[in-house]
Structures are given as structure tokens and as C-alpha cells.
Image 1 (cartoon, rainbow, N blue to C red):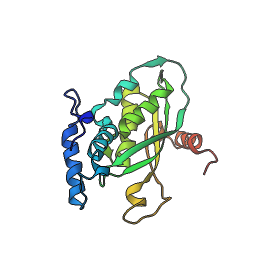
Image 2: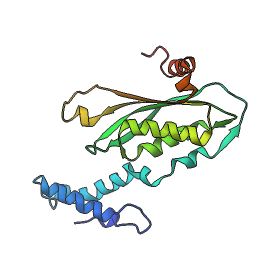
Image 3: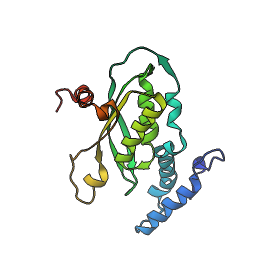
Length: 200
């Protein structure tokens, strides 16, 4: 029984009714009764959840990098510990953690909150962590024309901690380095020091 509050919005890129039907089918397939009281509104809830978790599929993260400020500053800028939640495309289970982003400006600096907005936009889609890391770095490099961009992402994957090998506490770390952070060892060492310091 579909929830009328979650009726398909004709302007929405997400087919809410189709999502609800799919959730009902999953419940029935695993042996549940989708019409029992506790599950009646579950398809609508799950549909709204997926629309939120996958909202990045319909966002253009470049819009957050359009507003820049002219500055002569040419040292490393780092925003670390940007929390995020994303979804593994292999099992549709969440992975979550922190992203650290650094760059060396080339005459243009970005409002710091925009880096968090880029992470938020890119993280809200089904993907693998490696691709997410590379997409953030490539976007920063192309849109800001920065001298260097470095992105490090640390995440815990529930597809590894709650199923399969079941190893809670494991952490996946990925990095993508562009420009001077890739070609200059001392620049790369500097950004890693700024990100981790003595925390390791």
C-alpha cells in the first residue's frame, strides 16, 4: 500500500513509486509480508531515503567551485576531517568517513565551505571510494586551475564490517594527488604532514 505522502513528484528526477514497488518486492522476496502493520510505510520511507542518499546523481558539484576570490596566496590550503556518507555500488551498503582536501592556489582561492559542499555532492551517489577520491581531485584541479590538489579519503565500509569477511574497525584509505603534490616529493610530504601531523 503506497504512502500518499510520498507520491511521485513530477519535477523530481527520482521515480518514487517505482522505488516503493521495488522495496515491496524485496520484502516479499525475503519472505516478509509487506502488508503487515510494521512494514506498511516502509517502502515509502526507503524510497525517500534512497532519493536523499543518491541526490548527488542529479547535482553538478562544479557549481560550488564557481565563486572564487583573487589572492596572491600561493601556499598550501587544507580542509581536513570533512565527514561524509556514501553508498558502495557493489552491495548498496553505506561507507562513511572523512575526506581531507588540500590545494595550492594559482591566483584564486575558494571559500572553505565550498570544499565540504563538493564532498557532499559527490558522496551522494552509488560508487567506489577510489572513484570518489579521484573525482574530487580532478574536479578541483580543472575548475580552480590550481598548482596542486591533494585528496585523501578514509572510510569504513559496512559491506566489509557487517557482512562477508566481517572485520569491524577496518579502514580504507585512498588518495589522489595532482600537479605539484604528484610531481614534487617535498610538496607531497607537506600536505600529508598538514593532514595527519602527529595523529598517526
